Image 1 (cartoon, rainbow, N blue to C red):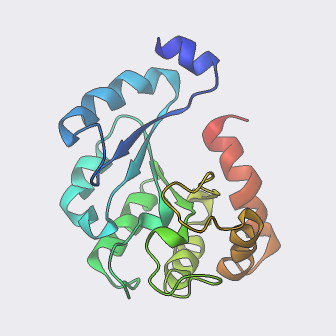
Image 2 (image 1 turned 90 degrees about the horizontal axis):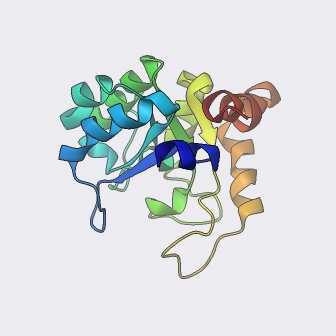
Length: 181
């Protein structure tokens, strides 16, 4: 079945570790080992404040890890000095972890158009590890009463990343490397 799904274009298994998630932490290691031979990754979503608690476990995963939504720090005002954010940076430093610069609305308390409370985290990630960042739209924007504009979300990358070379890396080169485009 994994071979069939790979042939159909699948590249990851999602672990949503917040209310409503289906797969428990106990399934992570075994499923990561099963998908590794197919070149898949673990797509992880959790409250980023929990990274210190799971950091050592995530570093040992036998496959690539992709973290959703700028780390999804569920506390207003989380800064780059937060222990969870520092743990995310260390995970990225391993070379086996990526982070999606996506869905700032998932954690922003300020809201559109700039999501100013998420901006410093996105900028810090792109500056520290541009070779490990990906942009994503999070389309179709589940659970959003007001669906954001994908174009407006893409435009945020102009504020999150200062130079065109890094933007190209995040939009083109990094996805090509991770997903094998």
